[in-house]
Length: 112
Image (cartoon, rainbow, N blue to C red; front, side, top):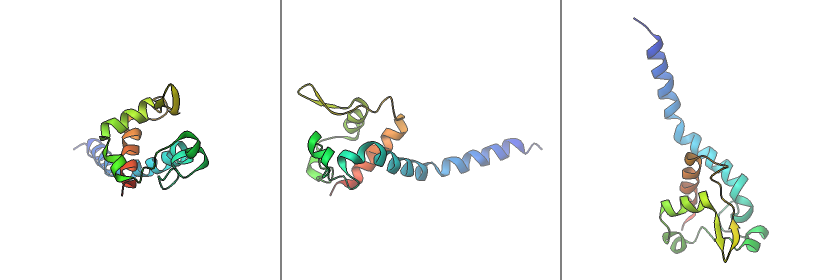
């Protein structure tokens, strides 16, 4: 009997079991690194950079309901412009699809 395939499957199962927790940790870290300066740690956008950029208050439930998860994902990937001016830079070349999807889930936690 060969124990290597069993060990590999067990290792893979353990790694996959930790994935949601790891993504949540990555989302929190990515939020702080890439989003927090404008949207704030709490999503309210009450920061100097947020006010200057016109960042939206992500705790505003009715505002969030205007967008599907896919639309938020696209905004994260492609950035946001208004009247030709970049309001939020694109993150598609900085973060993976999995990291961006985890940020969508993080954004949804702010809605009240």
